[in-house]
Image (cartoon, rainbow, N blue to C red; front, side, top):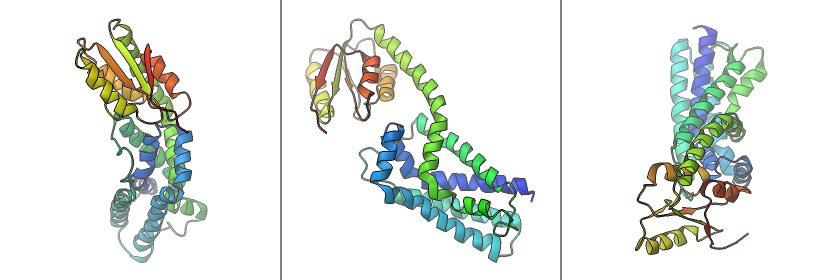
Length: 282
């Protein structure tokens, strides 16, 4: 098999395994609204949980590569296929069993998450290909550039950083898409002069107050409230664009505040003349 083709397939296999095993890290990124300060704070708070998936995949890679590329004398295509199946299946199991089942919200496979997976796959594949472009099955462990071999085998150990790096490169694309949707939602609200807009924020109690208020106002007005998990700028944007109808007279927006500037951004979208602050905690 051509060495470049071998390197490309190997790189794609490892990239897929990394993304499957790194499910917890992508979940952290989503929970922190794709903001890097919050993501790294979460990583620091859960350092052991964050590095275990990558370390487990490293061990699996080393064992698998030793078995198929060093100990067993198999055809190159068979070794590459078998190794790929094992590390991809292993990555899936690692991701499944290391995911945070007690998280406040489960990982939602939104359009943004799907784009992040796709962009991350392309970026990781390119990086791995550049590292392994001179590798073939005959010299995975004996090639002259042993640094490249070590970098490939221990590549998953730095998964928290790789996810952040991919998120950084995906940011310009996401910014363009989100701003387009954001402005469309602004336009929709601006055209509704008759709509009563209410913003609710606070450290806790936002969702309860939102549903109580919505139930009361629904007695007289056709009221739209943002669903339980839609309290970010893009979440509220989606509600405005997909659920706001001409018959609605009241719009209640829950406004989450995980990061400095979040409420400013939410107000730039909704411009609520009425606001409720439920509580203010540390």
